[in-house]
Structure formats: structure tokens, C-alpha cells
Amino acid sequence: MKEKPEKLSLLAFEFWNNIGDEEIKIVTGKQFSKEKFSNFIYGNQNSLIEIILLNIGKINPDDDLEEWNLSKASSYLLRIIVQLTGVEVLDKLLIIIRGKIIINNTN
Image 1 (cartoon, one colour):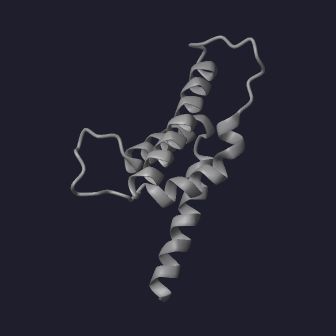
Image 2 (cartoon, helix red, strand yellow):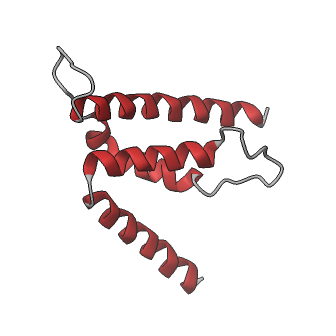
């Protein structure tokens, strides 16, 4: 039962990673889109960052190094977000990370 939520999470990351890959192709001109470019990643970056931060550190030492897991999927999505939004997302991340450090230090 424990594996099912992780598999579902991986599918969700795969969904967003595919959207991001397509948006990067459109932005870089490697793909033409007849439809209006929607900026799904940009519009959902705050929610995605929260999910990424919850999962990026989930490393199981028993996992195969070549196996796709939540940590790798989170890292890949973070890379996509940075490519599409630029430096502004890094500022948001630093604020969140600093906040978590302060909270952990006060406990």
C-alpha cells in the first residue's frame, strides 16, 4: 500500500514535467503551437514549489541509483521551473528555505 501513493506522486510529477518540457520547446522555438501558450508552469509555480520541497529530500538509500524516484522527479521539475521563470523563483525558494531553517533552529 505504501508504494501506491509514491507511484501516484510520480505520475503527477511526470504530468507536470511533460507540460514543462512542452513549454520549454515552445519558448525556445523548437516547437510551433497553434494554440495559445498558457504558461501553466508559471501560473502554478507556487503550488509546484511547495510540492517539490516536500519531495526533493525523499531519498531512500535502498533505491537503485538509476531508478526514477520522487527526489529526481522533484529536481527535474525544479530545473524546468527555473528555466521558464528565471531567477525570480530562486528568490522565492531562498525565502522558503530560510524560513524553514529559522523554524528548525527555534525548535
